[in-house]
Length: 251
Length: 249
Picture (tube, rainbow over the protein chains, first blue to last red):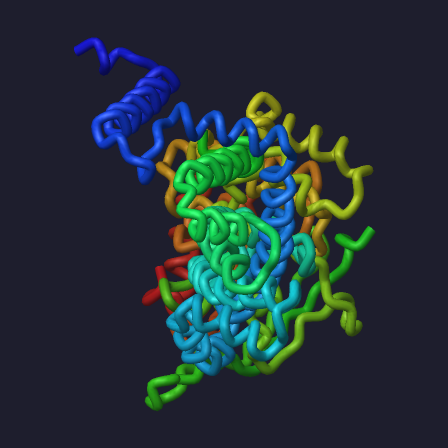
């Protein structure tokens, strides 16, 4: 079949065109305000970008995302490595992790707003608390899987802590860090929207809440498209090149 | 130069605690060995007699023992390089990067070039370990060990998993390198012929708790070690003259 001879890029493009066509046909068939056509959504997206409203709210949300992501990843990696290396510490904190992993995101968000007020710190803290246990668990598993023979080699050659971490531990943790990063980005996006929806007066979540009240599905979809586009950009401009560089030796 | 020093190894007791609550296991007891500068010593003993435990204690990988490893009878800890049973190269670093990683300063870079040249690896220096054969990986591990200019070089059956031909080739290159840069070497092996071919002195080890049964100097001249008949004759002499080694040989 001809379709099997297409390159990966052509196949991706074809898949995208089919998706948009399906959406367009469904919108025409239903002919309802609850499912606007891709064309209408594209017009609104363009207008929102041109007016500067969408970039402003997107920027606010991205700022929150960056800060909470950086905090969650840094502390998560640190605790994950510690727990992976020290059995007794892991035994002590294991139940804490299970508890935090199972607290619904909504509960954490509400409690943070109740305890710390409707402010930026509470919003970021809520996101960090939701993400941190996932990072810790992923990195802990990576640390447990570290190659003991390579660590012994590093010790016998007196590498020191910094050299051992950078050249022996970190490359082995890299796949786990990337997993935590990708799942983290996806999770944090979703949590941030709820955080903004419940207690902030700006950001994508706040805007979506506003559109929901106005039953403006076209704007909701326009913001969603912008959202997905940004995540795709982060994936292809930052994560994939980083991944490619780190995995070069496997080729 | 640090590597002209004598080294004294004294391990009074190395015991592994049985975490399951059973009897503790004493691997090494009253072990004493003095190594002279530039000496190539082969440790010969059965599997599981405690040779690797001994090397781990000397290398500082296991500090849970009673004893002392010292340089010139001072409190100075000797600088040690360790060649393990498998090469333990970092798969995400090229051959050259693996070697340079153990260096403290950039001045030794020319030394890396020399050693790569001597071990016939100059054209492989930018490859990752996964693209190397077993013999090449062993040679990289040997360079990595030599490049640090150690007081003592520990080698734990480094050719064990190589086929005979490759092992012979790498052994020959090792001897060339060692004659070029004669560090003090402690070499563990199961293979008596290999031990005779390499060593200045053979140290025979008992079953656990490991002790030295006897030490024998190898009288064969270095340039005659390729002659297998001489090695065979000496091996037979060992068996005939040392009845205490019967179980071992």
